[in-house]
Length: 299
Image (tube, rainbow, N blue to C red; front, side, top):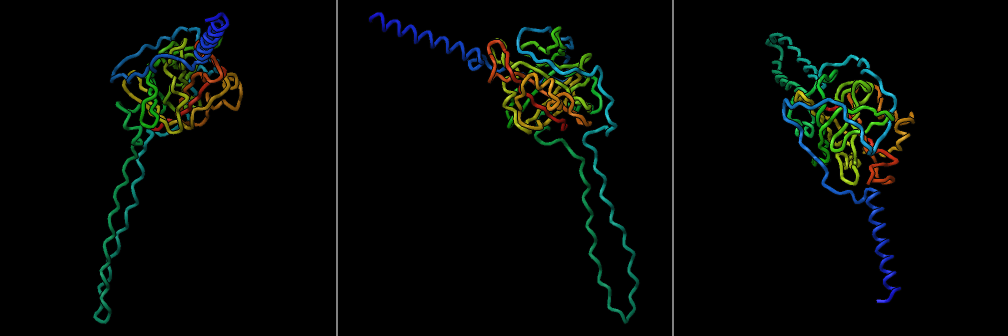
């Protein structure tokens, strides 16, 4: 083999290696199985200690309220019993006919209406709930686990730890866990009614290894999100829309995306956030955009 051929082969090998490195850095070659865990059993307890910051993917939330705003007065249950059907009035007895009058035909009895049943959670939500429903107006328990089910398949399952902004103003949860942006910096617990959304953030990859929100970009409208709390209660949410990719700075600064943090109203909403690696660098866990999913509580 002459020198020219050997040099050409070396050039090809070098280009292949550079291509593999490029794909790995872009996150295309992220390795490892997606970490998916089951929700803890009733009475399980999780730590609420803030997670230390790491050097991976980060985003800077907009200024947060220090306490949950007072919710608009609302019913104590999300599934109130419907009003009973209006009873049928008792008819007055017909007068006794005289001999010259034709007999009055006997009226058919009015069928009794079936009672209206109490509304139940949607079958899709009920099938994935293993504990009692958490309160709607104020939740004092700590969220410890989140699941996401898309088309009957579990695509997210991870423990939750409390996370706070670091010194640089970034929210950077630990790998293999979902960070709950909670007190004292953010006052809303996912699952309770508030003008502000509960916020859960996680990594999509961590230094080339798939992480808890690897599949978040696949979420479609109607996907089921289940949050489990340390007292065994649960809350179920339905995704309002498909996952949307938002530029990082726009997510925290553009009023058009304020809905991710402050949707308004008195619904109970949760916002899930991770990095969108398509335009970014996957090996280091950085990206220019974030995947955002917002869901409204249904049970």
